Length: 307
Image 1 (cartoon, rainbow, N blue to C red):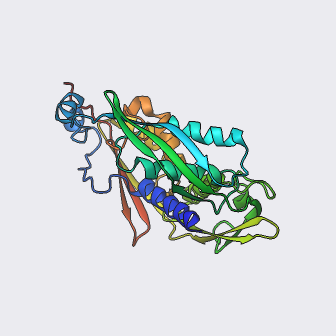
Image 2: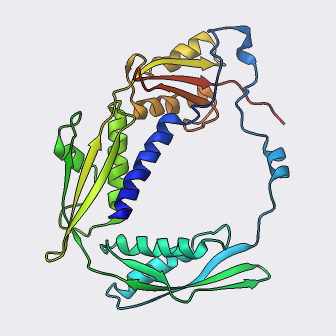
């Protein structure tokens, strides 16, 4: 199914963002205890005041105020109401594409309830303008198709993690239960994180789904490309004195297999010393050498200018 392949691509993109965030950032590595450690951080985010001055004025508010479904629908009314309510609770930036986004949310709502092959189309949606903004009433024709339960999840080409039961446990969905898009997506994300903990930061997993319409079962096979094993070879810290640097570095596992989760936990543990949150991209620069299989990281703990 195309949407499962899309989920696989999204998992791959998420992995690459996690690995390569701020790769284009070039930082000069300073020695421990140099006079320049008090220098201001050149990698600070833009000043919020000046950024707001340059910000384009926002357009009129866009909201979906009504959602109706038509077609031969077996899904209980309570579930239909929940899907409609979730769509109306979302915020939308512009009217351009809001109908397509609404249709995708409808599709996802049905797929999260086992209707993997559901087809949706715009029937008679309306857009009206008011003094407060633009209002959309979404009218959707739904062709549900069959409702599937999960038959089985299997894996192939999983060499580094050969324990199939461990891999299967990463998917929060039991055999025989409704085949849910959101839980499959969660399992793919968990799989990416698990391989990241073993140093396989370029891991990709491509899901392929087959269906037994007679038994109303869906079978999922994950084709795993583990990629190269990466090691953390260096961590440079700017803006801290020698003892503080050593305190942070002792938890970083330098010259060992790169474990993304351990690295993030180390940043959380020493957030008070570093002065930034663990997921702040302005203060963390990663340099990945694909050929050598190495990761070097610079942490910039220098203070940002005060405006």
